[in-house]
Length: 255
Ligand SMILES: NC(=O)c1ccc[n+]([C@@H]2O[C@H](COP(=O)([O-])OP(=O)(O)OC[C@H]3O[C@@H](n4cnc5c(N)ncnc54)[C@H](O)[C@@H]3O)[C@@H](O)[C@H]2O)c1
Image 1 (cartoon, rainbow, N blue to C red):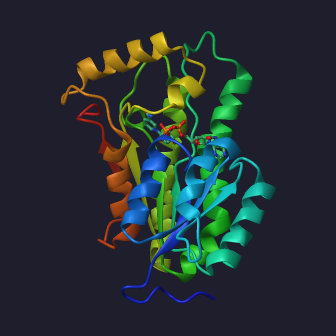
Image 2 (cartoon, rainbow, N blue to C red):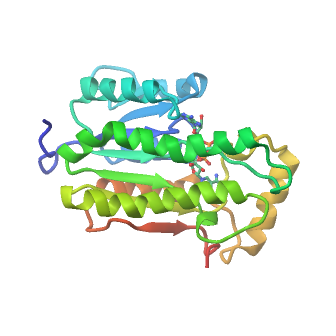
């Protein structure tokens, strides 16, 4: 069993969806704070951009191709984490998918695929790393969305999948609190990342969506991945007696 990290020892954990957007911004901030990272993503190509960070002996980062929807892939990666680092102090469930479209048009397979990544993936990864997190009295940070807090038209299934993530956070906080494991969640507003293009939107559609959202957000801008990554880093690395929180990072959008 892994002992809790003594004060001052480097904390070590997993970031999923680490190759792009908010996850990628987390990698930089966690490394800057002295943490060691096991960076998971399903895109081997995108992970290559992290390889230079892991060069050399005593590197603070390892990269792993993992599909969070695949139980075997997740289980084998979690074993590799224990072999590589010997402990796990935090997990950031950042891997996610987006889906836009009215109820009348949304295909069943797309809904299934969306919930597979956002809800099942978050569950499988957390479950696989739970023994290590419990041993270290660690921290789980999930990534929901501002639309989990405020209803919007035309992306109802994405919003529902993120509302599920927010509620899993609260339930797991109750379940794992007595074992000293903190479970929190960030709920970002629209943020400039490749997720919209990955969901099949054209550049024009993405621009129109983000411009429309920015015009109604009280702070009148969309998010930068670093806005959310800063909160994730704090929730993961600092024990500030917070659990079950769903933190909106959205320029006031969810008000
Ligand atoms: N960008 C936004 O506007 C926004 C707003 C609210 C919440 N979020 C959430 O933030 C998180 C990060 O999104 P982002 O905007 O940085 O997107 P992104 O597309 O830049 O990054 C998502 C990463 O997750 C990876 N991924 C997807 N499915 C995976 C799987 N099955 N297994 C492993 N990796 C997988 C992708 O390869 C990609 O590298 C997501 O959960 C997303 O829903 C994003």
